[in-house]
Image (cartoon, rainbow, N blue to C red; front, side, top):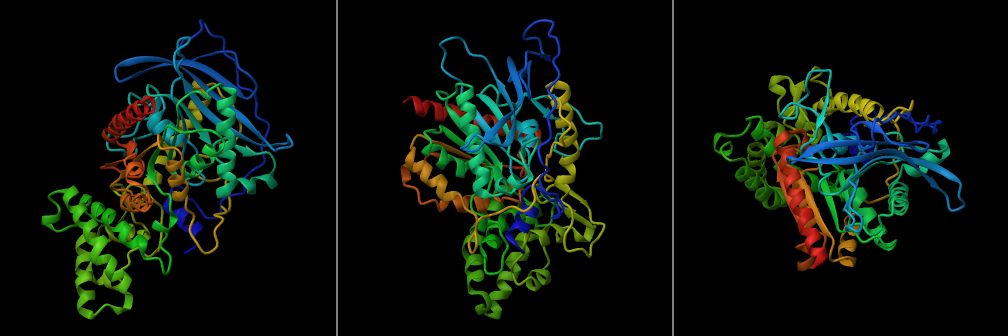
Length: 516
């Protein structure tokens, strides 16, 4: 399977491989201006400029009320010659500070895919409004609704949700320019320009700066951090949610046995959740996952390295252990040659019930109406796509006053072929993260992983972090947290609140370190 196909399947998109090419930018109608009864009244629009909508609102976070300004706008990107090349759409939230007070922290937020808009972190976790899911993160009955987000990060700093070119409303100026943005380098360079321009136009160069990424957004953040340092932007911190920096850790390719051992603990957590493990393994999830990690990093790793050199006795022992930790039958494990890829696992674990489990969140499951098929839809995506797509469109138009006839691409549709810029290797920005940490020893890194995430498994993230080659003092700048949730751990209310508490502690600690 090609790496492009793997990323399309395993990260955020899960859409047809035949996505349409990026459309040319259309004329964006100006946002409507609504008369405000009095300045600062919630939901009333302030004076606007072309392609910009500015509104004032209030929200209660942690029992305290905050008044904030929301700005939905385009930022144009130009060539060195001043020729327009693209427009990047963003939604930002700022809280006014008294004259002479220190600048508030500012967080630039990116989702993944590549091909996912920022709507997921925007309306799922960080923004002042969020999509209301069921308490366990499942799909509620339509019509869907937005509610105030009491776990918003707006009290920690100002927020800028950025849609890379080809996502959300962001578009290249001409079809022939779109290809340049659909690549690792072009994507990162365009977002570097956005951050620099935003800091300049909004006079925020003296603010503490953080990057926040989810999934491929973490890959972006690591690559951007290194380049930002070269442009004089020293970050206070990077927040990585459901991280993937080295694609070798998640690419099930012939000759690459690394993902098989790194996915195993997540298979174990999933089998635990669906009650497919032996009774003694069902008693304590954390202990069982740790046991699977220890075996995956020792005996299983050695067995994979031996390949066909395994003796019949050694093979039987590995088959038994692999069956024990995955909930799959010994016969199936043996037939798969001890190598269980993610697509196979999600369709086989509940085959006896004619159901398939989610990839981005393996707690979710759906009817398997085509058991003979080798692949199918991800129940996680079918859970999140309708409410997030409908509500981001409604929210931008009705609450923020931003009007556009463009399609807001939430998850695929605006990007065609992605250029990974590799030939014989794997896309990797872990070196960029390491270099940035060496250049800026004050920068802190926060890493959040879900135990039920089969798109960016926690053990793969741990492996990448353990192979950065950092010195002991720099290693202490990394904080990791695990959640009993999936790729989008914020879908579940309990994990949403815990993520906010953990990030608040991280921001406080990184700010304290910067002031010492």
